[in-house]
Length: 67
Image 1 (tube, one colour):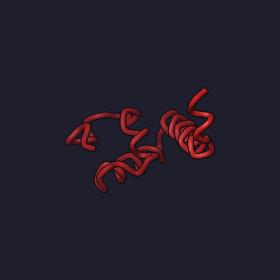
Image 2 (cartoon, helix red, strand yellow):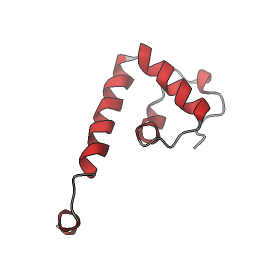
Image 3 (spheres, helix red, strand yellow):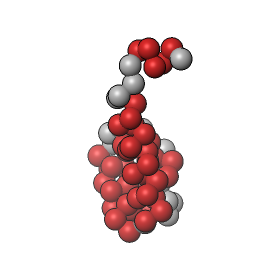
Image 4 (cartoon, one colour):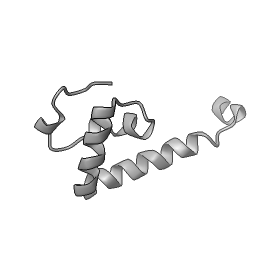
């Protein structure tokens, strides 16, 4: 999933965080997001929220999805 060919041109990586927590980025993108999360508390907090949401989806049953 290449959203921006040069991730260094964008100071924040929020648009990539969903794909990041699902491990759906290229190695280059994953590295750029990982480095960014080390220095940006706002993006790191948002990433943690998305990771928790993704984990919660695994707990849903088929019946939960029908409601």
